[in-house]
Image (tube, rainbow, N blue to C red):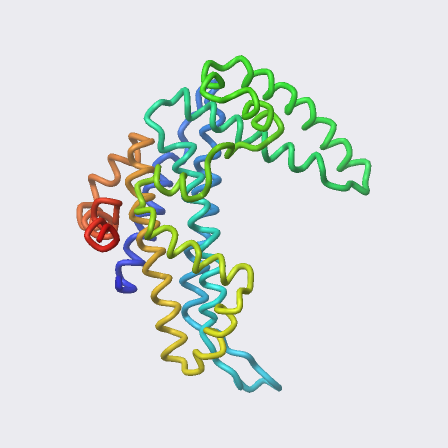
Length: 275
């Protein structure tokens, strides 16, 4: 299990990597790269929230602290969101083919806009937003259909892709394997986190069984360990995608060593799972 110092070190490295692109001018046509920053911010906030939740919470009654607990269940719910955010980031920006990355971004963006088209609106302002986004949707569909990358999909898949199913043919397990995680490791961790997100019986039982603060801390710290793994993978994915971040990673050898230590891949876990 990694130490709290490792967690803090990788959070600090995370900030330095993402900040390396601050103020850089985006070339015309490269606006899609901005979402690398917004996804990174989303992931960063999840990771900080995990750390904050793991520190414990005090409930006050009549101005007096009466209850203290470590909400390990919420740490796991947020950890699932962090994992999925990283997998989306890798899917979009971890690809060596920049043209394919941009194509994937268009399908992902189309999926978000298509989802919002189905939302109920109660104000003229919101209806105007949907009308404007409908035009953007039509533009994206045209660009996606014109891309040579669409040839990799069957006719049936193309229909779903243009409807907004950006992950067509890919499960979260598939995205995880592409990102270098061992399939069994992902299955075990993701299934466990999903159980907490969906209030499975086992998640409720574990919450009930973890009565002591020590047990609650242990369960939270185990998931912070998974957060360290996510940050380690992110550090190398982000620095590979952006040269300014690669320079930052090289300039911070101690933090890089911590990231290398916790960047578990499929090969690293083969001896555990392939028996």
